[in-house]
Image (cartoon, rainbow, N blue to C red):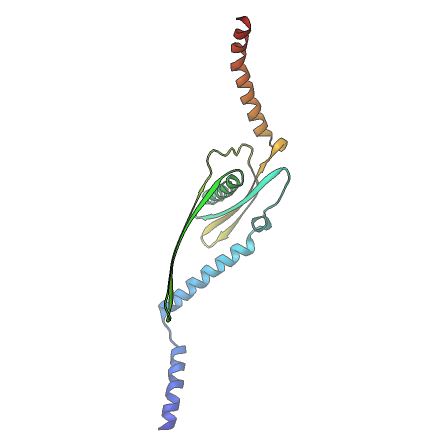
Length: 184
């Protein structure tokens, strides 16, 4: 009788280890597949995605995104990088956090909520360019990495040309008025 009572828990443990729950196996396989995608995304990420370059004549930002469409993956990654450049060039952020904690001798509970709003209004990205790009397969999707650069100062030829054109326009508009004032 004692041997039977001793063997019963051992048999129960062995039986539990041998369970062939099809749905649990499916869930485990899906979780492992997702973990592999994340690990591959990190392993395949270019160095500039992890450590953004620093320059005295440009501002860099990296973005990434995934999509089932090749072009959409790049467009979303580029938009992600543009948003980061925009925040660097004068965007604003505000944060609102609410935390409620209750504590008793037996247990503690907490409810917290955080809302962050970022805004990037009217930041001129003239001259921004794609510096690097990379794409990898992520299951049945494309994962795009994009590094964009916004040249600053004299390095931004397009912005300088835009500013010169605006100055030329103001000068052309102001010249007739200035001559009229001289003739008075």
